[in-house]
Amino acid sequence: MDLETRYLAAINVPAVIFKTFRHQPEVVFKQGKLLTAAYAAILQEIPHPAATLTVFRHSQNLFSVCLIHAEYTDILGPILLTDVTSRRPNSTDARTIYLPQVLSTYSIPRQQCVDQLLVLAQLRHLPLDEAAITAAFDQAIPSDQFNDKLILVNFEDEGAHVSYAYEKALKTAVELGKPSMVHDAFVGLVNSGRIGILADGSNLRNIKNWGIISTSVTLRAAIHAGMDFDQAYSLNDHYVRTLETLTTYDDVMSGIETMIKDMAQRVHQLKAVHLSAPVRRAYQIIMNGPETTVTVVQLANQLGLSPHYLSTLFHREIGVTISRFKLLVKINRAIEILQTTNLPLSEIAAILNFADQAHLTREFKRFVGVPPNKARNNPHLTDDWHLYNFTSINVG
Image (cartoon, rainbow, N blue to C red; front, side, top):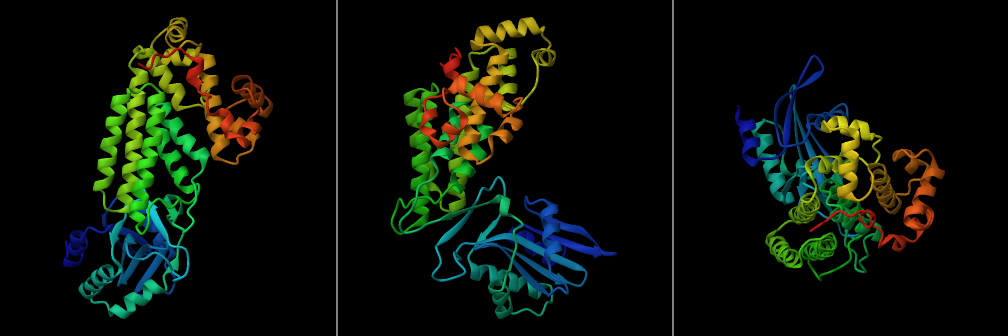
């Protein structure tokens, strides 16, 4: 490993080094969690003829840096500049918040980043000085390479409220005991609107306060699903203490998501503990795929049981037939989609494998009491609806 590569490893920045051979880039060094394909896409964005240094701006404070030397190209990032908030002095103060499970970044103050790039340029014998590096950041090329992995949170003087529908989706994920649903609901909740001002002067304090409120609200959903009160409030104290120890926006956001997933997992264990192994497995298969068309025979074959025995066991422990439970799970998913998207009913029906929109509307009204469009326009009408209202599952 040469000195330049050792330096990249030492500062632990996500990075890749491409060597171009016969016009084809080949990876000779890589560190960090970002997929090679993402770096290759950035490589394709470099203008031609290429400058020695190119900086891409993915958001107001998230950058990738490309250094070209002979047949090699170094791509560093994504780099989160912690003291950069806006391109215009008078624009809204906005922060990019990413979920570390999705996008691994390197957080650093701007001047320290410039200094590190200056050292790397000298190691590479590139004719770059501090002014050239600073200018490259000021003239960074916009890139949407990571748009699907970013959350933009704006803090404005008047604040704002997050979407009721997404908050309900997050609570539903906990009530159902489905950690896999938490991530999408969490991202949707943050993306749904601006987080209201909950503290003066400090955006980090604001995020922490929002996190404390979010975990408290979702804990109530866990209590509703059967969690013991003392356990819930002990967890709440633990979550608050944990959030208070965190020092960056990204760590706080990651912490909030992790805590809500923890709640959902605990509820899942509560719901599953009273089910026999085959019923629990069938239950999980249906819950994890609301759109599934799996039949009783197919379920029974997967579990090595006769269809009659599985049907009898499932009905006895869940309180409804497998077919009825599949329909309840579809209706539950339809409520979530209605309240968190603008998808037309015809598309929702197709996603959930209803025969057509009329079939969805008919079954929805039968179980919820109102048609889908009315539920979408008046989300409070489904506040008390829960698929477990139709079952006899013992949640402890």
